[in-house]
Length: 344
Image (cartoon, rainbow, N blue to C red; front, side, top):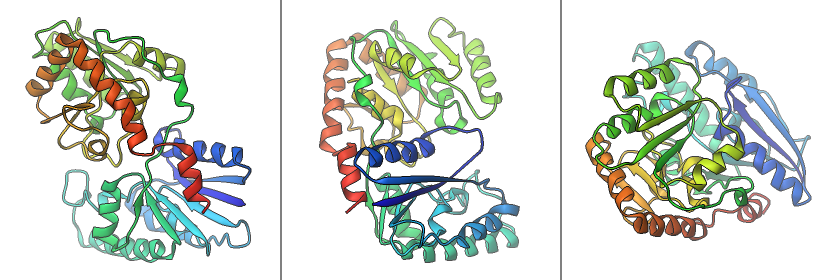
């Protein structure tokens, strides 16, 4: 089958939105399909949002491939009679975040823009032959805002065999972009309340330097420099595997994440428990409290208590980590399953 994978991207920003496309391309090719990958630059600024979306809407790929698979908005507005979607999120400031601090001021212009976006999105989404999402959270949003049914299809990671478990050391590890909504700051604040020898290791790089500087200043202000290791850089995949291999557990506590996030899945492959919070969104579809990790309130003292508990009970950390490894099988998170449904 000749398949086009189409998505949008923010220039110079890497992350899960690109990985899901590139890894699917590799797996489809390995299964004998002919694959082309298209990326369209897209910036979610009010002045340009509809113009950029309209430009994609003009593109008709009917004669170019047997199937179109679209991912990040607004790639879903591309035209093709056999359009599949692996929809990973809305333009959230105009959807579920409309009444939050992340939304634009509700001027008449912004309200009109939101209405136009909802109308176009709903029309384009209903054109799709099949709609998959990366989580039940996103499926629920599609039902609520666009009245369309969809099926969660959990994205695997590439080459999971590179992850291993070398035991359970002293570090709770978090490896992801340094962004305010990922809430590394919350974990640093928790470390001010730990009483055991547990350490926190944060690895990653942000879209700007400001949040990394804020984290460094907070570490100094709270006097937790001996407890918190901040690696403000992109670590290599080999380094990532090493950090996770010897970790006590992992932490991933974003604010209302669209999916479980690759950091959680990487932890599962390394057989490490995941500590997350009650408001972390899609992460809660992977983590079961007290089984393969902890779910606690987004409050520093409660997080600190769980960090100390894992440090003082390595057998518990091991049991939870092993349960997290089994969780991957329970949820059918593997590429053979993805390729099968995407080419059916």
